[in-house]
Structure formats: structure tokens, C-alpha cells
Length: 444
Image 1 (cartoon, helix red, strand yellow):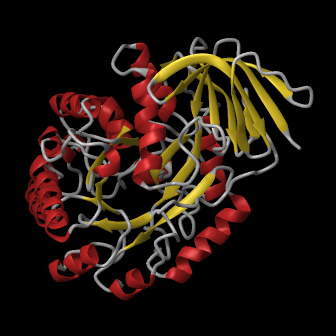
Image 2 (spheres, helix red, strand yellow):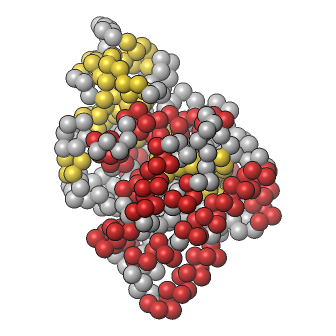
Image 3 (cartoon, rainbow, N blue to C red):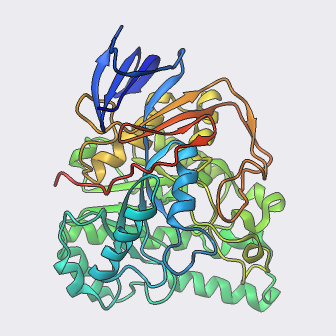
């Protein structure tokens, strides 16, 4: 039996930080306590480092199939391990899109052969695939993804009758990208009239505006309330939207939840001059005042989850005029180090960070046996050295696209060890050649 014993760690779990040991046996957490001994176990001496549950990222784009020049399941899940992410949920806007059950299973088959981290996928809804959604087993995958703003191919769901029928015909979590398409098209046309194709990137949050986000989010929430659907609004970017969400009931009882991404907590419109299209995301990074209100909502629990929306593009693709430069950027390797920096600054506690990046995604998507440091749970764990400064540079970036919006930044905390299902998958910059990832199962 494979056994590992993590000694003398500061265990961050369920709103506490407690010094102790954790014994891993095969793929599970066998024992948590003080002064654990086990003659058969390999000892990993934590020396007071922080032990966290593995990060669960509920929104990534790993680009496979069809867009693998940007990234693939193997390359991006490997980068995720270096960032302490042990579980990911990948989005359906690949090529072909994940809008049939057969294509969903094809993705699972690919991941079973290549992924370094635990995996599931979201099933894409369209104006045309309601019958497939009805056939989808609620245990099959993470949930349904709907693009209520522009996306690739035909994934924009803009038929209101179909949208309501989707909301009424699934028990699964419906995750939405909320931006009003008509508002964006109108804003873009006005700016193209003035600037042509080379619109200043600083106008991205004007084109993909607060109004566009709020119109779409409020409409989705109203529909969820009228139908009783379980709604999760991805990547909030405006302060105004945060008032649409509640914080007075436990997460397990919430029917409508929300998420914020690392880039909306870190960057603001003041950064476009320096970063340019490297921080062009949809929804757009907006004003510093929006960022402040997002932080407030995160800390008071109107926002439930922190994710990445990891979406790599090549530098050649990004190095274009505004209308031709795609939106999105790579983040999985640097998400946890960035949030740990905010902890060091006193912006968020470690306990709250773990709640938003580990516990809450597991609760929200009803993931079986993950997201917590509990005896009997899968041994997905991360050791953090909180006093090990390092600089993000081209030679440390692991994404297939080869760049990061954090390049040049110095982080004071480093991921030293990442465990996936009891297997030491990453240790001080070295990856195990063995993959031990699993398809997620759900307790629904």
C-alpha cells in the first residue's frame, strides 16, 4: 500500500489553522492528528508550511480538441499542478464544441489518457440542443454552460424561449457567461466608426460595459427565480452586479451563486496601458472601483467562488489590433500564488481563501469526497512555502502558449508539493512521470 505522512504542517481547513500531521494511504486521507507515526509511510516534513486542500478551478479552457496550438489537457493540467490546482472543470467552446453527449464522452476519454489533474467538463447549451440536455445524466459531468454573450461558433444562446426551456429542464447547475450581446455590438460599432479596427484596448471595458454585464446577469437571475433553476454566474466583473446576490443563507441552500476570477481581483483599467491585450478578457477588466466592490462582495460572501477562466492564446494571436486580438489569458499556474500575495497584504485570510477556492466549488457542484481535508476524503493536497520569493519569468512559465500576464511579478509564496489522489505529483519544481488523475464523481 502506498503511504505518505505529512508531518508538522499548518493545516488550513474549515475556517481553522491547526498544526498537525496527515497520513495518506493509497488515494485517501487516512488520519489527521498530532504525532502520527507509521513505519511504512514515506515522511514529508512540512516544517510549518501551510497544507491546503487541492484547489478546485471550476472554469478553465484547456483548448482540446481543435485548438491545441494554444494549449491542451496535458500541458495545462500540468501547469495547474505547479499552481496547486488538483481539479479542473473545462468549458465546452472547443472545436468541435461539447454540445452532444458523444463529444462530452470524447473529452473524458482524452482526459483519462493525458490529464495530470482531476477533471470534469461542462456541457454546452445552444439554441438547438435542448433534447441532448434532457438526455444528459445529472451524474455525467459538472453541469451546463450557457454563453449569454458572444462566443465561438453557435454557442450564443439568444432564443429566449429555448433559454427558458433549458432552465426548466435540468437539475444540474447552469453556469452562465453574462454579457448582453446587443449592447456590446452597439458599443463596438460606435467605436469602429471612430477608430476602425485599431480601437485602443483601454476602451475594452467601455465596449463590454457595466451595462452589458448587468443587463445579462439580472435577466439570468430573474429567469432562475421564475423557473427554480440552479444558477451559477461566472466571472463577475462589475460592482453593480454584486448587489444581485445574497449572503444571508448557507451555500448549500443557495439557488443562485456567483464567482469572481483572479484577473478581476488583481487588475484594473489602469493596467491596460502597460499590459495591453494581455489583459483583454471577456468580461472586461473594469475600473479600480469595480475591483474594490468585487473584493467586498467576495469577503462578505455574496461572491462564493474564486476561479481562473484560464484561456490561453498564443502571443502571435494576442499581438494584434483590438478587433483581431482574442480575449483570454493563461492563469492556472499563478492563481494561488497571486491570491497568497493578497493574503500576505492582509486583504484575505487563508481560511477564507481556502473556502472560496476549495470548499465552496466542492459544495456548489456537489463533488464527491474532495475540497476538504477530512479523513476518508480523496488525498488532494497542496503544501505552500509562504516564505520563498520567486519571479514569474519566461523560463518558469509552464503554459503551452509560453506567456503570462503576471510575467515580471514577484510572488512571496511558492507551491512546494501537490498531491493528487494520494500521489505526490509535484515536488519542488519536479513533476512525477506518473499520472494519477481521476474523473470527478458527484453526490447529487
